Amino acid sequence: MPTALEKVLQMKIVAVVAIHDAGHSDALADAVVEGGLPCAEITFRTGAAANAIRIMAKRGDMLVGAGTVL
Image (cartoon, rainbow, N blue to C red; front, side):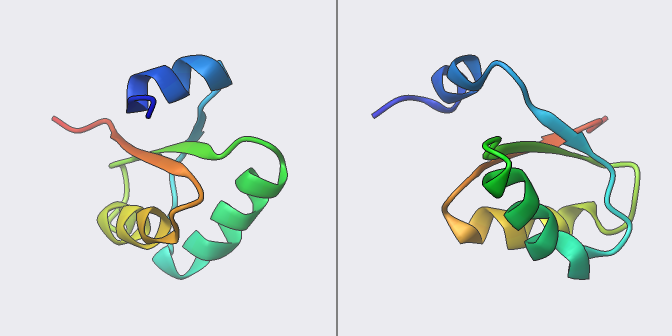
């Protein structure tokens, strides 16, 4: 089974997202997966980031990471 890093390297592109409403997480995940990019970095620039990551990670059909964590 490939590691997370190996999966990212295979995809070559990671969507970087600043989401302001965690309620939009599923729709966002649907869009990136349907667009052939099942990988997203959710930036921690908004208060919705942690919940968005939880929601998207539960799906199981995409790789989700956290960005801008200080």
